[in-house]
Amino acid sequence: MREQDGAPADVALEHVTVCYDRRAAPALDDISVHIAGGAHVAVVGPNGAGKSTLFKALVGLLPVSQGRARVHGASPGANTVCVAYVPQREEVDWHFPVTVFDVVMMGRYGRLGWLKPAGHADREIVWRSLEQVGMAGLARRSIGDLSGGQQQRVFLARALAQQPHLLIMDEPFTGVDATTQQVILDLLHHLKQTGMTALISTHDLRLAATRFERVMLLNRRLVAYGAPAEVFTPAALADAFGGQMLMTPDGAWVVDQCCPAPAHRLVEEV
Ligand code: ADP
Image 1: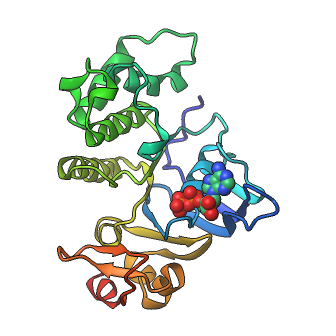
Image 2: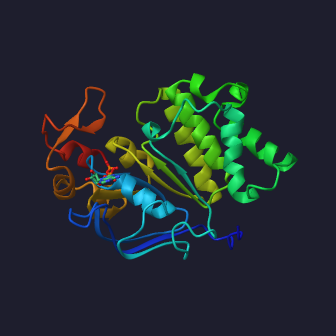
C-alpha cells in the first residue's frame, strides 16, 4: 500500500447514487458533500436512510451507480488509502473459532499482503491496539466468548491495527455497555489529535450533537451537513425523521417510530 502523503484523508462525493435494484428507488440519491481531512463526522438518519450503504460504497464493497466517490483522491477500494471499516455487530460471524489476538492481527494483513508473515513490529502494533481498547488481558480468549461490548472493542482494535487514514464505524454504540461507549469516545478523541478522519453512524442524536464536530443527516438524500447547530434545525430534523423524535427520561434524543414528538429540545441543547 502506498503510504499517504501525510495530509489527513478527505472524502469527496459528487452526485453519488447507489442502487441495489435498478427497478427500485436508490438507497442513496444524488449525494454531494466534501468531508475535510481529519474531520470526525456523525452520520445520522432514520432506519433505511442509507448510512450502511454509504459506508459500504466508501470501502468499495458496493459499486457507485452514478456520480463519483473519492477517498483522498482515490476510488473506493483502491489500494492507495487505508480505510478501516467496523461493520454493524450483526454482520459479523462471532462463532468463527479465532482468538482475540488473531482477529486484531487480521487488521495487519492488508498492509503485509497475505504471503508475508507477521513480524515483531506487527505483533507490537496488535498489542498496542488491544491496549488502546482495554482488551490486552483477553488476547488469548476466543472472540465468541466475549460480551457484545468487548467484541466491539476488539473490532475497533483490529481497525486501529490497520493504521487507517479513514476510520468508518457502523453503529458502534448500539447495544454496548457504558464502559465500551466511553472507550470508543476516548479513543475517537485521541484519534482526532492524530488527524485520522472518522465517519461514525449512530442513532443517538445527543451524542452526535455533543461529541462530533460535524454531522451528516441522511434520508436517502443528503438532508444537511455541517456543525451540529447548523444541521439539527427543526426543519432538517422533520425532513429526515418526519417528526418522529422522542426524548427519553435520561435526556437522550432517540427516534421513535411510534411516538412522534417535537424536535425543538435537541435544537435548544446544541
Ligand atoms: P441504514 O444503514 O441507514 O439503516 P441501509 O443502508 O442499511 O440504511 O439501507 C438503505 C436502503 O437500502 C434500505 O431501503 C434497505 O432496505 C436497502 N438495502 C440495504 N441493503 C440491501 C440489500 N443487500 N439489497 C437490497 N436492498 C438493500
